[in-house]
Amino acid sequence: MTDPKQWQSIEATAVLFFLLQAVRVLFSVLFGLIYDTIFAGRVPLVVTGLAVVVTFLAFLIPAVIPRRHGQGFPRWLAALVFLARVPLTVDHPMVRFVSGLVLIAAAMAYLTLRLRYTPLSVPSWLILALLGDQLVRALGHTYDITLRPGWLPWQGVLSLGLLGLTLLLHRRGPFHEIAPQYRVEVGDGLAIGALLFLETALLAFPNALTRWSSGLVSGSQAYGFLAPALFLVTGLPLGRLSRRLMERLVNFLWPMGGVLFIVALLLSLILGRMALGPLSAGALLLAQWLGLLAIPYALADCPVEEKERTGRALALGGLFFLVLHFAYAFTFTYPYTLPFFRGMGLPILLLAALVTALPTMGGAAFGDVEALRIRHSSIQVLAFVALGLLIAWIARPPRLVPPSPEGRVRAATYNIHYGYDTHWRYRLEAMAQALEENGVEVVFLQEVDAARITSYGVDNALWLGRRLGMQVVYQPTLEQLSGIALLSRWPVEAADGVWLTSALEQTAIVHARLRVGERRLDAYGIWLGLTEEERIRQIEEAVAFIGDAEPALFGGDLNSLPDSPVYRRLEAAGFVDPFRQLGLEPAPTEPSESPEKRIDYVWLRGLFPEEAHVPETVASDHRPVVVEARWP
Image 1 (cartoon, rainbow, N blue to C red):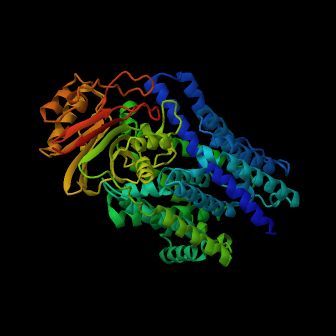
Image 2: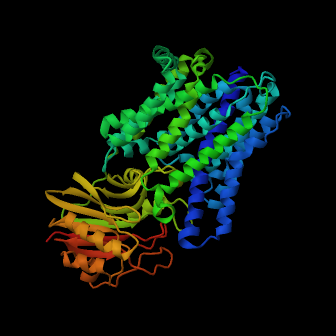
């Protein structure tokens, strides 16, 4: 590889790739800080406030990047990004927070310089970074393999290699041509921020598209298709055919081309949210293609700089990106923050899509397609296709682990706290080990995230299902991306779920009819609200939903003690508490470290309990409950 531009492309793509990872990490750490401040009172408000302020400052750094600088400045920015990426792998909140801030500040400064000198190359590098990010998440079944502790030595080697590359690159020639410099306008900067929000909130996550398009319950089939499909669609704008098609469409529809482009992007998101199945999935893939095409056409019309605006434009884009993400987070936490945000997820995404596509309203923005064209060798095209096929093979539905011989069933309930332990370390593997060691065949999960940036974009239920060889039934409660789930080693014959009346955080009950040998077993998972008034109403609705199903398992986080109305209502409905039936001393489940309250249960109806216990694991902020039962 002797072409300096190819070396520069590797450097720039790596910087943007690490930027995407750092954004996920930073938001996940902030989520823990804010949670501990508001709900647990473990972190002073001033500390969390300071963390939010410095986060905003990191994204505003482009505004202070000087117009004149030495040729070595970009080299040191890239080097700082590569070095800061190493501690980002360490699963410690403060280590990740500090390294994430440094990485984001350096990457945003680097991006500012790239937009000043080579704006037409930035969209291609961003797309390559998105492809790399999708690949490492697909390899880990939505859990980025490069953010796990075992990756640390490999990350050290990779960062050192990239550091050597950038030093070699800048020794061979200048980082950029000295002239001309280009000016990115404010609208273009906002569009970049809006697109980054769309990508990191929804469109770049096949698990998010799966949960949007698969209805109330889903297994692995939709993800197995969408993971490779999204990878291929994300790479389409790099191809000559994709850009030629867009140019011809716009020329045919001109002068309404920009308007129709915006309408198409907005409608594809609306249809993706409102429809189900292939229609929804196709609309969301179309939204990804259109969104990624909007930025190249916007930057194709950057004027030669007369006055410095690029830094301020990108800083405003970074600010807009943060505002959108904080607003989107409120749609998940509206009961405890701002009730106005209930159900506002789609409008926020539509606003971001509108801002992303607005620069296409300028007719000249669609003209310079030739300047956007990238020449690809046959080897590069084949490598891209091969990676898509690799993702398809990895994402295929997993083989189920056979359950125990018919006659007994081992069930559990587990509030997994979005994958975190009490100290906000990501502990999904430890949770999986706890379930595996206890031979669990059916498990009810609460506080399950499916693709939120505040939990590393991981689909908790999908990851645990693949890790344990279990089928997944997912019931969304908040914006399709957070809810409850049921996992089973026994085949799932049918599944459904309903929302329960909730004045505060939306709750639900999920149901699966399982085939246990020649028998059928109905399993119900639930999470009840935080006030007694809500819980009483919700348990009545849950009992009505269950009806007279028998034999049945019923489990979840009831947020209720054994002397509560909820407990007595379940006894009246014919359910049996295995601890009481076996004469065992009930073990508390919350908090996981020195537990004091018993609020997590597995109940039986039409089954006899054989064993019941609470494993001593601190992987989550709750302990699981494990029960073994047999048929009469």
